[in-house]
Amino acid sequence: MAQSLHDFAELIRRSAVRSAVHLELRDVYAMDDEDAEFRAWREGHRLDPDDRESWWNPWLGLVQEITGRGVRMRRARIVSEPHSEYIRYEHSFTFTNVAAGEEVRWLPRRSASGLSLPGNDFWLFDGRLVQFNVFDGDGRWVHTDRTDDRETAGRCSAAFEAVWERAVPHDKYTL
Image 1 (cartoon, rainbow, N blue to C red):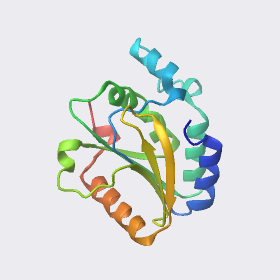
Image 2: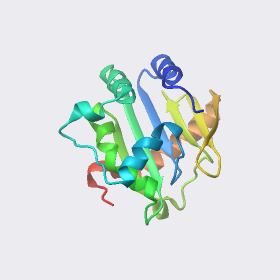
Image 3: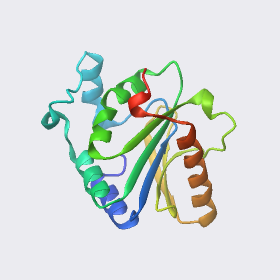
Image 4: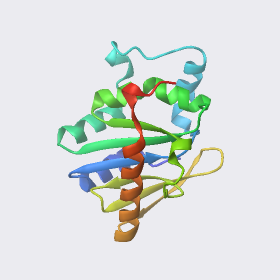
């Protein structure tokens, strides 16, 4: 089971004063808590942007809380093209992240050539604390590693900023 929202909420509340950035590197995530929604999406269900009550959830509430405190929250996704089914699903509801206050960009994997990237997804809080999220080959969460090592945080910050510079804002990235 992945880190609980409660535990992550406590981490971000105490660790992010100015910024929280998230780099996603995978084309598929096998998250048990998404199974029903993913299945519904496969069957044609899409979220209605005008019916916020139907899609607002605790994660979005946390994003709104954190960004409401003035923390800049950014997410960059490096994705293969053509897109995996999971990325198409994820793209379909990313408007919810944006509505909650998160900035999201997409970088086609072919545009990431030449960048130095970490081997795992990560969150970086205020440029000093890194949380790596480690997944197995099928996209299932395995564990979380954290470090406040300055060199590691600096490399992750540089990698994120390089991706962010090349990436396409969500509202301009179409599938």
